[in-house]
Length: 234
Image: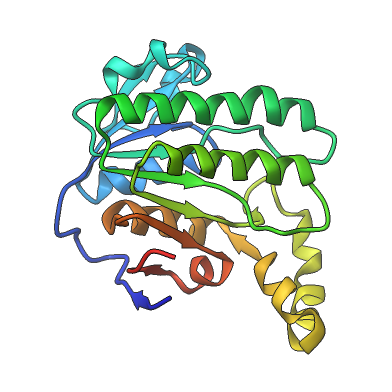
């Protein structure tokens, strides 16, 4: 997979119309801010109670992320769909919520995107295989399969854990990861399941929006960290 460095401060060559689910979340809010600042036209899907948290400059759509009928009419004229809805702070104890929220939400988003003729679907998936969070991985993999079955051009971003405000405890693991990456037997797994920072994740999402895939493209942890975007489908 060829990686091409991008200048995050450069203006995009084309203005995108972007529909974002989870626009007030941990990644959604900074992503919407960045997209608006870069001149894109953004619509954010939120619950009524969260409408005030949408960054200025974005259009607000109030709806239920688990029910496409509540927001699908608001998706056009978007050409890009970014799906960020999911259980907050995933853990092995939230398997039921992964099935009742994450799985249902991506099914609704795919339905709405397909009905609206979306050109490019950006999906926050998860790195795998991994020794824990099996149900979470299965649900996210099912989401990828739904998107592919719908025939949508798509970029799948696969982080493992995103460091940032309120998500700092894994910082203590950084030296451990560094050591594992130096050992041949554990290098591949440590890189695949490496930690990324929120600023890196948001930059990768912006890159995915501005450089849409044709077919299917996977952005793994190494690419997220590098701040590069794959130009070729995986």
